[in-house]
Length: 191
Image (cartoon, rainbow, N blue to C red; front, side, top):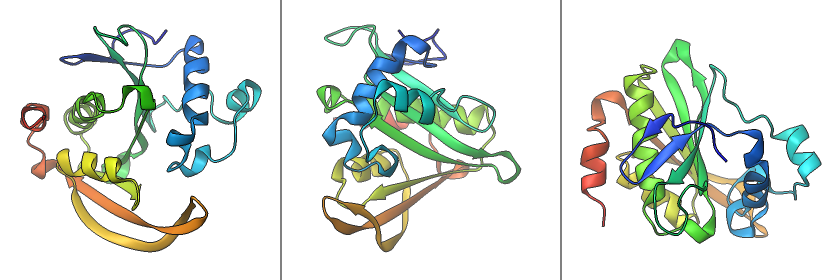
């Protein structure tokens, strides 16, 4: 069960992960549809591997990792994914945005709500100037998420990562604090 609420959103809470969340996190990173486009998740993780290589999740001053937990409905009280700002480069006012959700929770709008509220936290509370995101080109859902969150496409690096037996392009996105209109504007465009 995730830790206490860190960011209270409309339909979800964003909470820090706890030891009891390892089973969910391990299951998520091992899911073929999740690991397909996340390079670090390419090899299977046993509980022991997960604990050695990925736990504890980065939750220090150089990163923020939170678990979105729906307040009601089918997934009420249970984590459905993970959102991160990592690494956070305080000196440069920069962080990278990362996200994955269990496929059972895809299509519910949780990624948009979690992303918008985490980015708001990054700009407002961490005083970031810039948030970036990198997405494998075939990952249509993540590209759409970045665009709906207001990121600007800044370029393509050709054949940078390996997925599904071939080298694929990586799309690079950026969002500056003065381009950010806040979560209400982003979430008002849900649908």
